[in-house]
Image: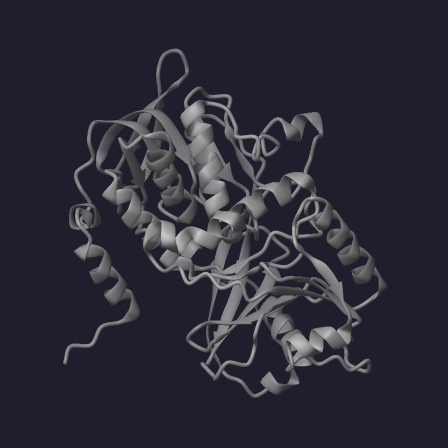
Length: 417
């Protein structure tokens, strides 16, 4: 009997879908599209899907220098939550959760969304004050979040160590029950298949080498390793590469790039019923459907494009996890990896049109990109289609860095989640 990997089976399933074979095998680019999306991750493919589904724009090409979901979409740790502090953040992340809840049904593809809950631990007085502030702000914005005691946290997650003599004593926690996890690469595959079925071209191994402009300064298309492709509108959604791409059009972005690390353990039977996070120690943990413990760390303290990151960051994270969960001290790690995240000065994204007519950008998500995927894609598609932002993303503009209307979510993004 022939054996298939999970990835091979997924590819075969998508190939069997009517019309997918042609798209999967990379059609020759047309000479002209209405919209070009640069970046075939979850945000880019989702944007193409919503352009076709909600705005009737199907003459769309999604270009990627690699393969779909091969960037940060395939390297994140799958956490989904919306318990951010500011109104703008609560709006876009809660919009995303509302879309997550029906995404598998809408795409007819199982993205394995599991609302198992996200619990954020407090270890000291500062943590308690900060998390309670988030709880109150969330509830005012209609986001579910509540404060629980250390004993209640232990009841929800029995392996958690709440001893007051531990290195990181747990004194309470904030719990968002609607948070959880999803299958990262399945999100990209699901959006890709659905967009392809509506006529969107998904062109892999197509690297953008230049952004072309008309004499009046507006966008006219892109240069690629497969030739010139024209378009009236171009959306850049390429985590880790946004600054380089925007430089091609003469737009300087307020971004810095940092390595972001994570690892997974050998698989074990179900033991972690929710996502457990700790901002103070920069560590978080959940368990995948395959049984692996998924452990994430904070970003490195220096800018870099390294996909390995500093060893001491991951070591500190594992030390913290073992202190909070002594039962895992003898577990073996199977693999570790690093992704590159773009970070803005206020740790909030840019989802906006640019000063260049026809050029749009979606970037700067830092550690929050995956959880926002459907919400980000949905409002970005609206922005491109209507040449103006959706009400939900109007605050995430470039102008805020000159007028001072920042959305400072550094506290909410202190952990790489």
